[in-house]
Structures are given as structure tokens and as C-alpha cells.
Amino acid sequence: MIHPVRSDRGQTLPIYIWLTGVLLFAALAFFVFAQAASARNGAQSAADAAALAAAQDSRDELMVGLAGTIGKDDHWLDWLNGDLFKGAGATAAAERLAAQNDSTVQGGAQPTAVNGFPGYRVEIETRYTVGDSIIPGTETRHAKAQATAVIEPRCTFAPDADPKKLVQLDCGGDPVDIDPEDFHSDDLPNASVLFSVHLAD
Image 1 (tube, rainbow, N blue to C red):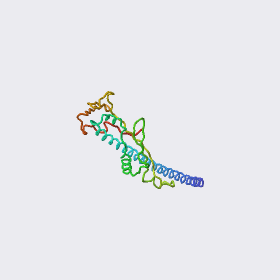
Image 2: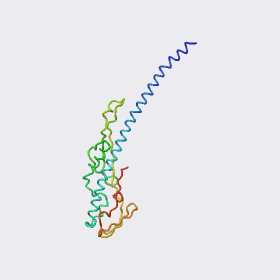
Image 3: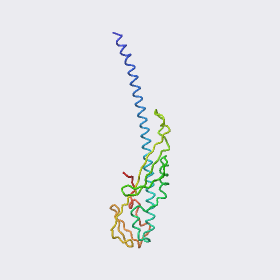
């Protein structure tokens, strides 16, 4: 009666060791995937921030151009289309935000258009790596991501609006009056009222 019991115990031990090994490997594999997911999420956040920074820099340029032409140029309303910027500072703005997120911009902020709206496509690479793991090579692998941000005009006005007289704008439901005959740069509302900057879907 004693021998069968000892035999069962002898058979159970290898199974227990095998199951422990399987669970340990599964835990390590999960940790590797979690490391990779964390790196990807960090990279995407950096790309989003960099693309938004590039678009916001050009939006600021639009505001300066608009303020400088109202009352001086009969075509000042064209600035409200949101595409008259040159974008000279877009890449530098994207690089600053990428650096704050421990990443670098690859190839600069690339001008693009989405659904007719101007914007920028930015690709980044993290300065940090996925980290050491049971998978060879991850300790030297950097995460990459890309994002696109656009500048969307928010204001409309009457087709027959006279750029030399008071113009009433409808900026997403917010009324904005601009009088070229009595205009000061601080009369303009916040940039976000005239132009929306957001990530492309």
C-alpha cells in the first residue's frame, strides 16, 4: 500500500516543476510585451506633441500675418483660410517638444494636408530603448511613431464682406468683429478662436 503513494508523489513533482517553468516564462513574456507597449505609448505621445507644436507654431505665424495686414491690405481676409504661413519655425518647435519627451524628430516637420486642411506630419524616434529582456536585441531597439496635426480655420463671414469696413466673423459660434478702420493688434481674440489645431484622425 505504501509503494503506490510514493510513486504518485514521484510523478507529481516533475509536473509541478514543468508548470512552474511555464508560468515563469509566461510572466517574463508578459513583462517583455509590457516594456514594448510602454515604449510605443511614450513614442506616440512624443510624436503627437511634436506634430501639435509644429502646427501651433504656424498658427502663431498666421496670427502675426493677419494682425499685420488688417487695415493695410484689402486681402487680409485670405489669412483666415489658414494656409498663408511659411512654416519656418515648425521643425524647431517640433524638435523642442520631442526633446522634452526624450525623443528626436526624424526628417523635420513635413508639410501635409488632410481633408483640405494644412498641417504637418512628424516622425520621431525615442532616445531610450525598449530595455533588457529575454528577447535578444531589445536593449538597443528604439521606439518610433508618427503623428499628423492640422490647422483648421474656424471663422466664416459673408461672401460680400467688404475688407475695408467692419467685418463680422462667426468663429465656431463665437462672434468676432474686426474693423479695419480702427484696428489694434490686441483686438484679435485668442488664436484658438480663429484656428483650431488638432491631431488628424
